[in-house]
Length: 111
Length: 116
Image (cartoon, rainbow over all chains, first blue to last red; front, side, top):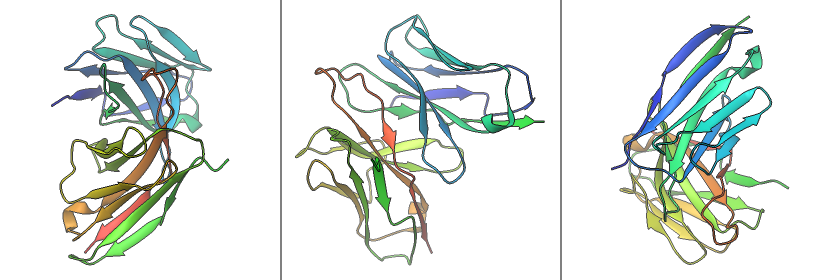
């Protein structure tokens, strides 16, 4: 079946540093989504990407839809303590309603 | 707008008991989904309903059944709970835009289920 590899699994960074994480797929995707999950809550959408090569920002967050359509990247600039949480990527192949999720990147920001 | 509402928030079951997890959305979305989340495994799709009246299996459907009661509600049933079904269950919904599949999932806050 389809697989999404998300890396890194976890990271500790200093406040103010930039963060990068990525997802790679064994399949070509038509949509990439990035979510953040806080403890005890459901995932919240950060950025949605619908075209290969697309680069989209949401405040300090920037995500890109890889040109091979098999990968996506999320960058967080100038991290702050409230960026702590688990970040998930999710992807969808053409002609399907199913979204497959990565295993998550757990981010901890040290003040 | 409440968005996606899941009930109950917490549940403890004994092995072999049955229960139904409820999910309702008030956003007039067409598609609804059930995922389970286990440590280190991300979210795995159990079942989904592309539109009212249809349901399809996801990655891990064994041991579960679903009902799309109407456009708003999508329930998940465990007929005979097993310890392996201890997990956090998330319901999600998604609108249909211009016959495109391009729209994101909106999640509820989860049901935390423990099977002893």
